[in-house]
Image (cartoon, rainbow, N blue to C red):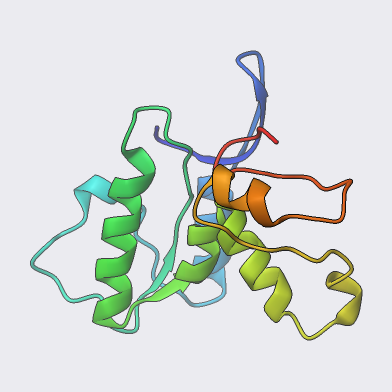
Length: 143
């Protein structure tokens, strides 16, 4: 979409990350900065050891996040340094990955909720208890 989102409330209230200010700050710190749309990357280039700062996306256009995921995995396999790391991209709108990552944090204060994972709603409802319990799908906001 031509900008980094950092907050999205509705069509009338948005804030975005100032790419020019960020670029100037990084260049002042000695980095060479190239601003590219993800679909304008040079596919013949090797990005090993490049620092790649990227923005995630919801699937507004059915497939946008999958497209970004494919490119990020390709960059990761080449040895690019993704910011944030690929595992955090996977956690965006993916409750299973969010919970798996949360469970791996060393701080016990971040593990106060016990989560279980099932391949379907039916499998979850057969096994969950004691009630009350919250059942969430892996994607979306419903529960």
